[in-house]
Length: 572
Ligand code: ATP
Ligand code: MG
Image (cartoon, rainbow, N blue to C red):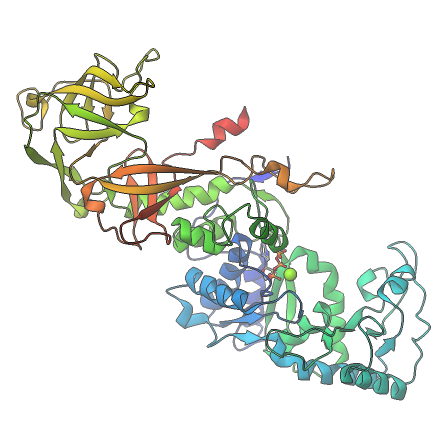
């Protein structure tokens, strides 16, 4: 296993410091820029995941801290994998993460790299005119075969010395759609012996007769990532172009292209930072798309997915994701981050804000045989122990109740302090009960516990101070709300499901028990739960209403358990 980062280091919202912010500060001090402009440039070929949240928090966060703006730009230069559905989901997810400060920092509207196709073309012509680009007829395979290796120089393309006129003519014909896919490429004329393989005459344009989700069939040629990205940044006046470490080796090409063209000054500057990797998950859009397509999960927003829409549906607050991103910070070294850090941030927010409720996930019926039939009463329950202002709520109490199957053992293990035959337990906020009889059906399944209650043990009663070792939660049968509750576990059983070096496939590590569905009974105050609220069910965790809910059919998600139960299991 690689180094797992689990220090909860600087949780300071203001005064964040890292090498990127130092650079921004220095550039402002040197008056290099009047205003900082960053960008978040997703390719709309999938839904955003938690790794993207790191980039969103960094780019929008820097804009916010330094009085600048951040552009949301769809990097939509690849026609075949991109869809409008993804564009819509990306906007929604970004707005969710930066809600509250979007107005201050987000450039109005969404920008599209495809809006610059004309400009890219003109810049390519400019490169050809200055002798810095040529049309090459080698196929991708032929070119690869003569590109050389990191330790040996490549060979020049036989088309490298074409005249400017010929190149201009061929490039115009590529644009006019005269050639088949792959027949020709526009290449930068740099250095086939460069130690940096990305500088060995990289492709700038490829022929692709494929409709684009915005420009339709207007363009039969598309710029490569390397050609387009630096120009997108330049066109938008980006000051600091922040990307993940794999692009470090592309930076010389980024600079070469801008240095070779007549672009506004100062040019944007690319700086790389470590991508986020989380344990127990995969985080590439390609792999996440595969899980969706194969039906391993129920869509991109399945609450088990590491996508932002999945987290939102699961009930994770955006503020917890922001706190998590601040906590992990920005570094130059790739490492594996412990998902427990994210879970810690989630519990921290929810513990402070969630109203407390009683819910029973695996109900067993309890009948209090000495409680008068037809009678009922109310007890008072605390709404949030962390928030004295939240007050109390009434909960019905009566002859028939539900308790959780986990709180009863017919044949108890030693030191079992919850309910057992002949044993006593306190029902929180109510009274002490004693199990007198276990009623089973013909198959031997427990259908009812017949109990007696100690009336005097109610609050204010003569035996209210009487101590029993166990206290459990419960729900009154009268007024109980039925709900389908979805309980989630990690999607993968191992820390690095896509380590992949030994050829193993992440599919084999899918957790078969990542989703468990139960029919629960909830306290009556949840008859019409607020779809935007997260509730703490005492002892069970935090829950929210799922979008599958319909009138008469309530569906809840467990956002997270009260405590991490996994750390122990994983160490076995
Ligand atoms: P994936 O590999 O998951 O498909 P990507 O890098 O291809 O992701 P893009 O849509 O190109 O996804 O990414 C948009 C921005 O988000 C880029 O600037 C990229 O550097 C950043 N980003 C993507 N994944 C991560 C990550 N795991 N950690 C930090 N930033 C990321
Ligand atoms: Mg990408």
